[in-house]
Length: 274
Image 1 (cartoon, rainbow, N blue to C red):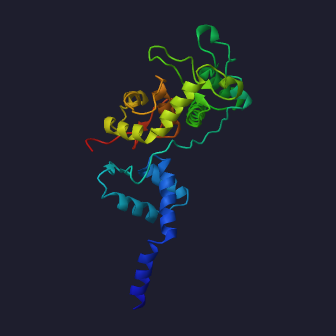
Image 2: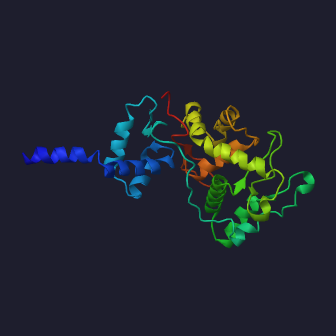
Image 3: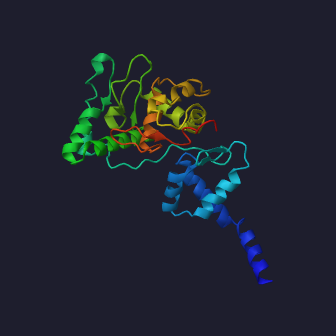
């Protein structure tokens, strides 16, 4: 009699507010991992304090949904259960670090060419980090990507241009006086387009990109997907580049180093014909 009572109690507890709260916390965590359950995100979730049982339980609940994607060793939760969120990116560098700040141009440095703004000299930053931090080329490059990706995600930087035929000078700083530029309203609006449509952009890209070593970052289809968005108009012809840098910085290209591009993982892509 005792064992059936214990089992019944456990069953009822699975529907308790505590259990639902745990599930909601796990979904919230996975939203920043692309709503994807796979080897690396499972390990990250366990490190964050979640259990194998919680992860497996969430996956089991998702499987009957026709919009759940199972591909390779990965499961991508359906949009009804999880909204892919712009990830929080860990980074060792900050925009106000002296060795970072000195690699931005003065706001008027490129104004005569029609490009007002404080632009990052990416090569100078990577070279400087090898001296100021004692990092090798791999570490300097990875931390540069993480800084840029995190700053694009937060809206503290942008890669903005209204024509696909004219490459922007570089990544521009959008803090303090550096934000006092004529196109700031359009830049802020385009950033909101990326943030508000991030889930849709990533899920659509997965349909078009195969998870292989032959899928370099510029093979992502962000530009085509963004061009077809409805609603708030986007004036940044290079918004796809911002999205690309964000997912690279977040580690969604696994095995990436300063010299190796890595391999995309779900939710950016799919395996085979799945």
